[in-house]
Image (cartoon, rainbow, N blue to C red; front, top):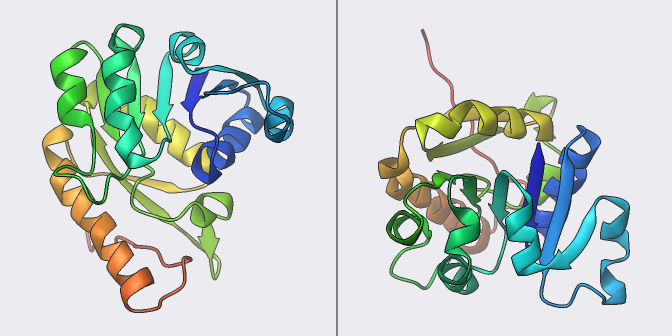
Length: 199
């Protein structure tokens, strides 16, 4: 796959490394691509302006600071049309933590997915704890489900699909629970969720 990663922080760079190792073509979108701090990313894939990166991939990962995600979607709606758009952002202080609603309004042909938003990036870098594989809960367009499950599995996580985009509020509740445990109760960032079921 050709994957555009908008943002080059811990989440974007960690997932980019994993997906490049799995054989995908990666392009990072940043505001100032010529900066020296992005040299390490150039060993993974290309680093370009945000707009160029958004146009590149059939899959677009939003790994921006939460408040910036809505502006990105608005400015680059045409580039997102018809693509799988994975929203990994968390606008914790906003009315909505995700940008799926805005994406549906201005790029209705996009295939929206909410994933990589419920855990700290450290759990993507090392997807096991005590020998147990970490689960990643996600939701989104059923048409994108298989491709996103593949991408989650290639990171080393176990994908757990919880439904279409209308399940995003439940998923964001899980994110808030993670924040409450880690920052409110002092659990380490290597705190994760595991689905156990008897079937």
